[in-house]
Image (cartoon, rainbow, N blue to C red; front, side, top):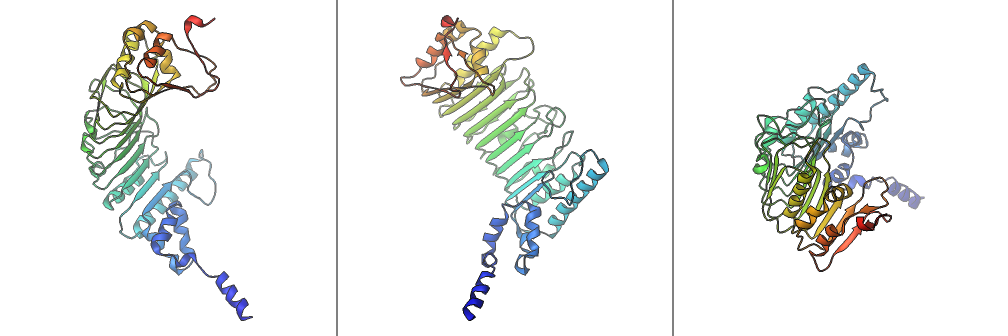
Length: 385
């Protein structure tokens, strides 16, 4: 009987509760904040543990409301938003005044003035947040608090606009975050009286920069000047007649998607390993010959790359004028891998003029050509039916 009782006690023993607070908080960091707070009912040990959470995750879409609400019912949606807002306010009010590691917030379209996001960002900055993800989901531009753009503790920042045509992120004249190493912006406009082309120069430790859905670059252009930058992604939703300048001597990885800019300036970029180009054909009227020549000149700026990936769209642009490719030799002297990335739909055949393929073959003693689709084959136009 005694042994049976001891076994029963060991079976009912709260082994997890004996773990150090740091370990439990680490486990709780994998939960959203609502779930983490609910652990307070487990025992006295857990009652106030959530108040020291280093990570906060507030997502309106995944927030566990008591009942499902139809988004078309505005009155009930407002009640839902009020419940979500009240929960965030209570968490911030009851939380211990310790530093934050990571904060994620995805508000809702029915928070038009974004007061909720505003308060949370100010709280995060005040408590030395290191990683911040914000998706306001408003139908018009959201103006971040001024203190946000000069946060001294931020090492990683991700901002995403709801609709790039209506609510593009408006950057300040200078993003002054000295500790920032990773920056991801989705849907921002390099326009307006407050925009400066050197907006990123206030982040001297920036190593990764990803800019998605960039609205048209105007005459001022866009300048990326970062001495420690190793990875850069540029994806344009629209592009005007502006220029793109890149000064990043440590850059090893570069990806570009969109219409080619009219002017491109770079330094030597001698450390490049991987380069990816997905060049689109403009829908507006343009001089196709000049556009192809512009693309050739841009590719030559990245001639030190060891691996080059071209989308089928980029290949099709280049093959419009094979003679231009032949005369204006692409000199990828370090190239070891040429990859062709196919579109989502099945592509059985890709035509590439021999003179264009020879440009890459003549650039290196060893060249591997990789195809993403097993059905795809190269065909020279001279051999096509």
